[in-house]
Image (cartoon, rainbow, N blue to C red; front, side, top):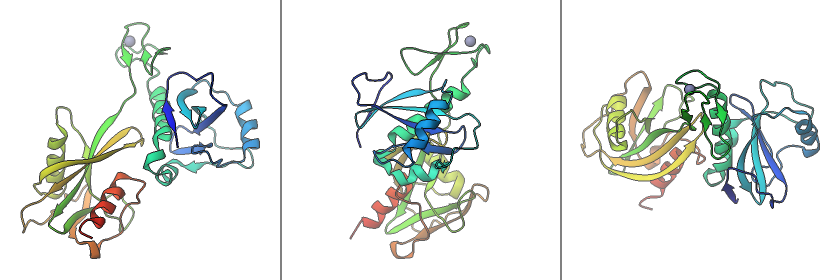
Length: 274
Ligand SMILES: [Zn+2]
């Protein structure tokens, strides 16, 4: 899939595609990867009749201009269309094609939550030259928010540490993750999160890869790290982490899908040494 981000529509593009979102966690995804998900005739009627003040151009997708807008508070859709759970669509899309979905979701969310200046309370205006909202009174500029977060695959020899988070479905285990605090380097975030959540010390921290995670605006940065103490046992904090254990490749519990960086890091671990 070829997605080129852009600020203004390309007049030479071959038509237009849209991504449609509600304000929360649901999406109507229209032709995000060249394959129509919904009946286009019904959709065209809907798009003709909708108010679209918040439409945002995202770039070009497969040579077509791609934009995103929300159906504010709308619950009912015409026959033939249905809402889809955004997180499920995002995971199924696969990490190489998630870019336009994430960009659309985050820019709309930023627009929705920055309508007024955080410094003086005046209504902000969209910039006509970049993705920014400007305060006409005090001049403050408000850019889209991105929250850096780490996820760390911890190993000890052949073993891997996996934890069950309080928010996970029953039986699912994954890596230790958390948001960077102000002032921290990512290495400091990793050491703090691992210590706080499971009481372990780690070293040999290496970058693995990253993934945009628009729920609502995280940038997940994946790392690998090692625990060198052969006797250290994880102690779950009992709040965020309910259980944490050392596993081996042939004793793995239920793990995340490869639509997330957590799943990709696990598949990479399983493939090692074979
Ligand atoms: Zn202001």
